[in-house]
Image (cartoon, rainbow, N blue to C red; front, side):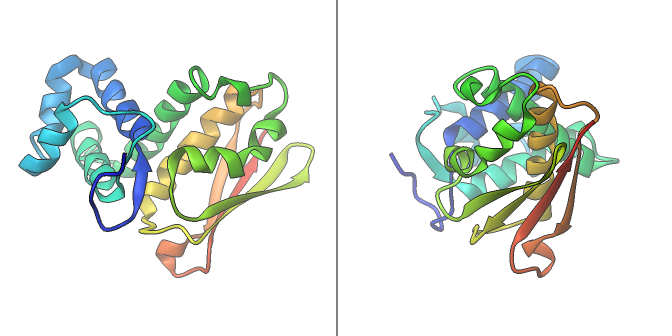
Amino acid sequence: MVLEGSGSRIKGGVLIARLNMLRRLGGQVRVDQVLGRLPPVDQALLRQAILPVAWYPLELNLRLDSAIAEVLSPEDEGRAFIDMGRSSADEALHGEQSAFIRRGEPHFLLSQAPRIYRFYYAVGSRTYESTGPRSAILRTFSAENVTEADCLTIIGWHERAIELSGGLSPRVTHPMCRARGAAHCEYHCAWE
């Protein structure tokens, strides 16, 4: 199933994770508060059953994420995007992607970045490079509609994924970003 949009797509599982996070943070009232900030067509789509493996327009996800950030953290929207990524990792890695977690082995999870990328995005690719016993670099190439907000969700996702894999005090920095004019996005991951 593919829904219409500009061509940039994301899996329904991302939308489900965002809505589930809102329910945990305030029930249906919180969901309604966020959806009320979206255009009526988005509201109608997000109130229907969302299929986790179906493709949805990336723009829908970007609008939903912005509305969530406005409601949950108007003073620090960047933090809200990181928290969305963390919540998405919790849901995925305690669910259908649990096979990517090996306790005490963050490198195993990070080495699966090319496969994990396909769970979320239809276009582009991600690579993994080990740079030390407790560090790695992930690079994303040819992604569509790259925004700094989406990159923050990716940072949050990988911070939480490293924690779930047993890495302590994870740090993910983002020195290169296509949204800031770089040729690709780069995420430097480190942990104790």
